[in-house]
Length: 63
Image (cartoon, rainbow, N blue to C red; front, side):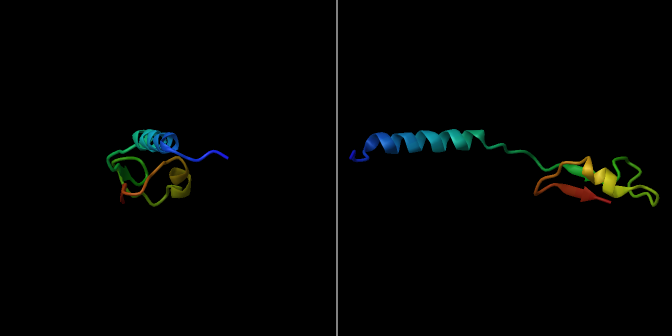
């Protein structure tokens, strides 16, 4: 049985550094509900609109 030494620790450090550099940071996005500057419209299917959007935590939704 092999004893874990400094090589295993080095590998863990390299993997953690790679994972941290792969993290994507972005600024919040402002989503206008409905997609236009018109904002809220009564005869629009907003369920259909929302299925075409991709939002993340921290994004802003304007009605």
